[in-house]
Structure formats: C-alpha cells, structure tokens
Amino acid sequence: MKLKIPRRRRGPIVNCIRPDVHREGPDSISMYFLYILQSVKNNRYYIGSTNNLDRRLSEHNGGKTKSLENLRPLKIVFSKEFEKEIDARRIERRLKKFKNRNIIENIVKEQRIKMGP
Image 1 (cartoon, rainbow, N blue to C red):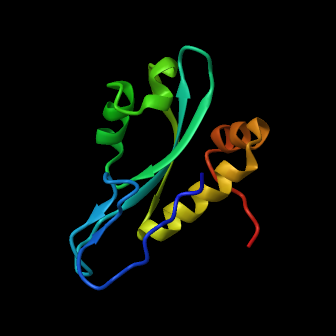
Image 2: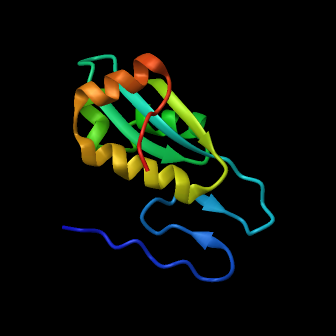
C-alpha cells in the first residue's frame, strides 16, 4: 500500500504520516535530521528523519515503533542535520530505495553521504 503525503498548505505544517515532524510556522528555526540506527542485537540498520533526534531514539528504544520492537536496543551510527524538512525526507527516501547494506555501511564508515544529483 502506497501512502500519500499531504500537499503543503499555508499555515502551520503538520505531517499526518509522521507526527514527530512538526514545524510551528515559516519563522520557526527548526533543524531536521536524517539518521541511521543500528540494532545492537542483530546489526540491522534503520533509516529515518526527525526534528528531535534524542526524543526519536528514545521512542524507538521505548517500543513506540512496532517494526523495530524486535531490533531493540538501537544506537545512532550516523546523523546529518538539514535546515529544511523536505531535504532530510528526500535523502531518507532515496536511501531507503537503495535497500543495499553496503551503501549504508559505507555511509556509516565514512560519516558522509555521497550521492549524485
């Protein structure tokens, strides 16, 4: 099933799919993060984005993400800060489409993302 991302409208932006990503308005100075988590239990990776990295890690390790319940505990192995939510989400989607462990391991090892346009 493909989820539809709601179109942006004027006023406060609230993402219906990811309630943790919220911005109060156009004058708000919020930073957004792309992150890669690794399971301490089985070394699997999880890619996500948020506007509050500490809170999101606590939520993941606290069992609020059903798909990660069996992978806990998780640790942050990579994060990158973005000024705009759309940039963090765009890179998150691109990385998730790769589904290639070698690419993710290379990003974690080098602590940078090398992508073409």
